[in-house]
Image (cartoon, rainbow, N blue to C red; front, side, top):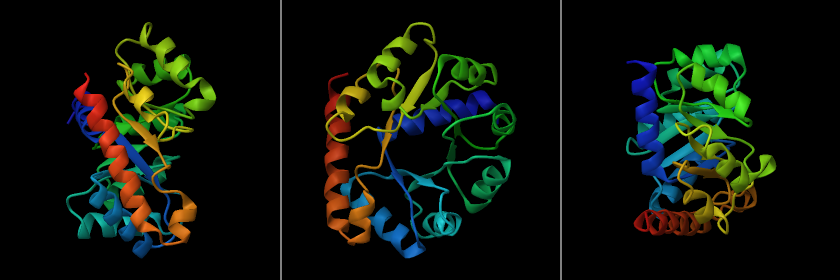
Length: 220
């Protein structure tokens, strides 16, 4: 499949998600309980960051045990991690930033990719590789809504998933931007809730996020 086809697939899956919970796990069991809570709240797509030793094992276990869930491997920093995530069964890949060597590897990946960037120059470089669906990171730190509006004119073909510094109170404003397919965030799965095993709070926060997506999309 071509990069164009993979980017179309990335566009469809991010738009369908609307809000992408970004999770970091310390064990397979913890990941399973988080995923169950998100599913119960109405969110079936998530980004599982490759920041802990348990990440790849959890990714493989969730894809085996919860086939209805769509998992993006996040914080992919190099080609080795890219291949490990693919082998573990990731449905798509997400990077926080994309240096040239990683962009070249991702352009040949056999699945949808959402490469990260933070400036017009970085996004132009990604578009030159064939990417048109990208992650804006760290969104709030690089201008937030003002940055999105600034990118919309000159980079009209670019669709984004802003992530970083977004919370429930600003989610709708971000999601309503015409160049935004989806927003990423960890406000539904804060580390303290996970440490306290407060998975009912994760479920309720996921349900509130799903309601935001439904409300914004109904107004489109």
